[in-house]
Amino acid sequence: MKRISLTLLFCASIFIVGCKNNQGENDAVNQMDAEETSEMEQQTNAESEQTQEITVDLQAKSGSELSGTVTFTEENGEVAMEGTINGLPEGTHAIHIHENADCSAEDGSSAGGHWNPTNEPHGEWGDEEGYHRGDIGNFEVNSNGEGTVSMSTDQWCIGCDDPNKNIVGKAVIVHDGVDDYTSQPSGDAGTRVGCGEITM
Image (cartoon, rainbow, N blue to C red):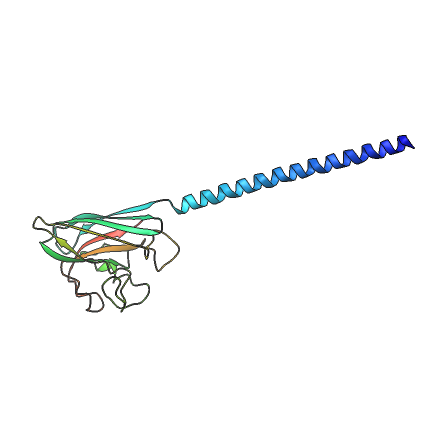
């Protein structure tokens, strides 16, 4: 009888130890799965926070002597634009984003109209009455023919899936005139004297 009891006790011990070992293995597997998931999430977050940058070379149009570059940098959900433009007369000039990345026409007309994916009236950026996503506005050129323009917005993105925000496939257009922010559809900004294609 004692021998039977000892045998049962031994079997029960083996069963308990086996269960504990299985539980330990399951805990280890679950821990590994959790760590792998955490690493994947961190990698995804890091990729989403990566800085993207496009530099656009401006081409002279309509017989102008314009040159320069415009750089778009996306970081943390915002796109910053920094431009340096040379070769224009001193004063105020307009700059916009147009709907086509096509600067083939000598007068810049191949770039199409203002980029306006939300079908709003032309206006100054941020106007409650509406404005185009391409309505950057005006910038100043000094007596040496040098001008700079800069802005930052979360309403643009570089290569994202939102057609209302994605600036890739569009063009930067510089005008010889001033954007009056009221004339439709483009602010009566005059001749297109510079064009740059926004491409990856």
